[in-house]
Length: 300
Image (cartoon, rainbow, N blue to C red; front, side, top):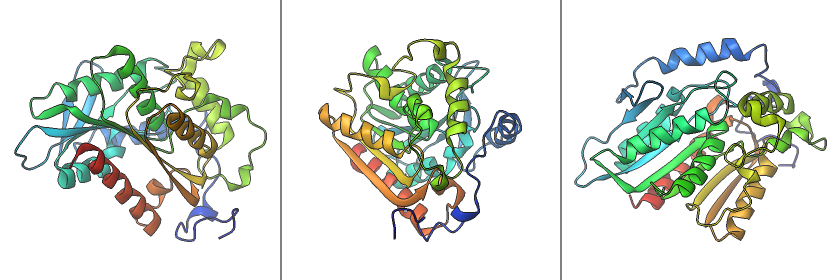
């Protein structure tokens, strides 16, 4: 396969647009994805953690000891999406790893810019760590796209606050670096679903007032100068994803800081391929790899 070709198993790639999320489409998409989040999950429940945060909870049918935990954070460029997007992974984690998995319904930008979404995710993490059937020393944080960025930021926040020490971070094509929006050397012809214009809108919405000054590392984890003593990581990204370069760079910086990091690069995969084409062989193998990485990290 040439470096410009899409993975042949991803058959929708040539039909998909480069941009889906724009200031004009974000509102309708936010309402549409929000409807899914209101429906209780099959095999799980919705728990109100506080007045602002709910989590979709999946528990194993049985366990002989306090279980491991997984906090999942959904994607959507910080501006759309719902916790229901994590149901598939969380259900598998509960069934196959006997772990308690939760997907956090965090508040979205631009109405709720940084740090509100991140604080909501931390609230979900603290709730999971406080559950009597969960071992707080065996909790992984996971996320995809903007949720991967929030998961990386959550690892930084947990290190700073010192209350909880996540055992692992699983970052699926994470949105880590607002500076990618400023690049002029990216071939947009290879991008699908999430473009430079979408990226500018997403970051502008999420950063809010912070966009006018120095961007805090907790908002854009790639800006963090110190990555030492973070949890071991797994990062997955496709070569046709806008976030490819920033994700590879973050993986290298984690390793340089002494943090074990597995980098899983998929030739010819575009952004969100595993959501758009969930039944493809590439997407199934990608999910299997994530579950395997979580199992290895959590001792399941």
